[in-house]
Image 1 (cartoon, rainbow, N blue to C red):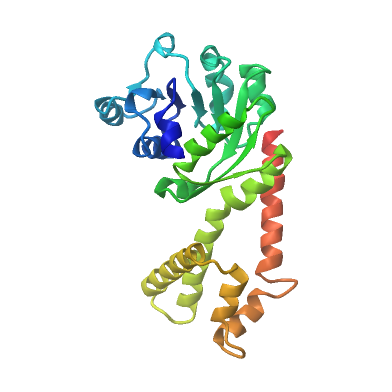
Image 2 (cartoon, rainbow, N blue to C red):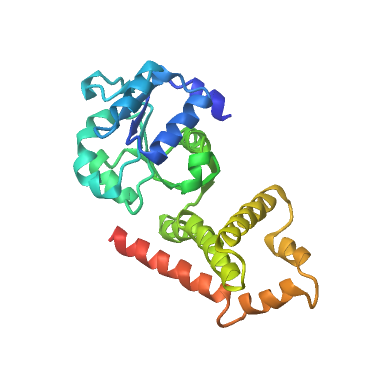
Length: 278
């Protein structure tokens, strides 16, 4: 469905911000069939080489706003701290048929409605960094003016970088961000501390780092490809009275183990998200 949706757009997709996440999304759209002449990039900081490469493919880079046809989509991929200055300049682009999709952390639907108007169709989304390799997770919440067709369009656009999940309550966005948005850092930390623990147990540090990294990556791939719940996969590795059971006895301690720590960590990230949103 993503390919047919992206190939049949009546107007351009305007991307504000072509950094790592925005750039990954643009590449995903082009691979899925978005015509290059339907893509517009607005980014005053884009390197000249990158801008030239996109222009050579037919993508419009930093045209005058007055020269941009009425867009089907305006996707906001800039850092949230620049939003108050950058977004008002784009408000003339947002017409009755324009879908605004934001991937800015902490910027609420109300904030964006205050800039683009109460009638604007706005989707707020938070993708995570595995989007760079097409394995991201984007959690989305629609504003009240988003039609079912526009929701499908947002799913197609964000689906170019991974899976898309929808929630109905914007109040859950901070918790979703704490799990998926921040979650890759938790997995990277797991590989980091496993390597350190292996070195503490006597392994050469370089070897410990290599096998910890490969183990976390391999387990993630198995989890992705298996239909079994994570708990079942864990149990399948664990022989009664064996080495894994001994380790899990520490990690699954009800008061000081991995579970209570993760609950505390996600709660802390959720609280911080609410603070940043004001």
